[in-house]
Image (cartoon, rainbow, N blue to C red; front, side, top):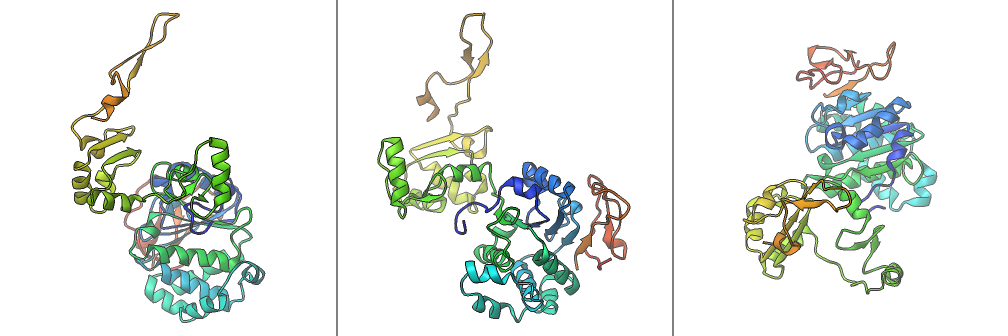
Length: 365
């Protein structure tokens, strides 16, 4: 699955794992359905570790929160990897069977001592050690990440650092262990699974390099598959700029707000011959053109007659116009989030749903 836009585990496995790591993800707010599975996992006995510069609402449910300095994710991963290696916690059998260039990776992380990791990340060395040992010794463990990892200039390296940790400990390719990117927009994962991406068929089967998959779809659908990659989003805007792409059909996306260079995006969309927007809401992209089409509302009709539509278009054509905290568990259930952690006023722990103050930094308790 590495290199494809999907995780190696199902949501069900989150409920039945031993350790859940949310790295650069505030799933409680940004992926609430997924977080229900996280809560089920916690109730089933899983530990939760959150790695995030902010003490998010997800971190309030964590056994351990690591409030790293922004941009130090690779440093933390490397320090953990070195600790796992020197502590003889590597899954040697998995590494020999399923990986390549382990020695080069091992040599590259050996300079990342716990002390250097603390200096680079702001996380106490003993907390990095605890996290590394907890992850390596877990029978089943899941690492989940999202835009906190990927929206960096070195996003690919960030993701590779997390993948390397999973491979080092063998936490991939078996039930309850995996590496899972939580996708950043509405049902983008489902769209990818169904082939709504420019280089893959449903199930992430390659258009150019998997002739057997193309042949199966041609046989079932009765039409030829164009065995050539389409344009991704960046290439689409380049095509608009050069005049080779003149029509755009936007489904469930809002590029007039979400593109990094919204000025360029709006200018290029304004020059299109045709812009169609299909969305639940009147987004900025939908407003970018003067005409719009609301979906018809259904009106009740007398018995025996079909309901009539109102308020919409009569024809489709008209639509075109030191930051670590631990959760205390002794003497209370896992749903209890009150109590004191660490030392000092800045390490206060609060129950989810109440004000958490500006807690940023504490020493291990």
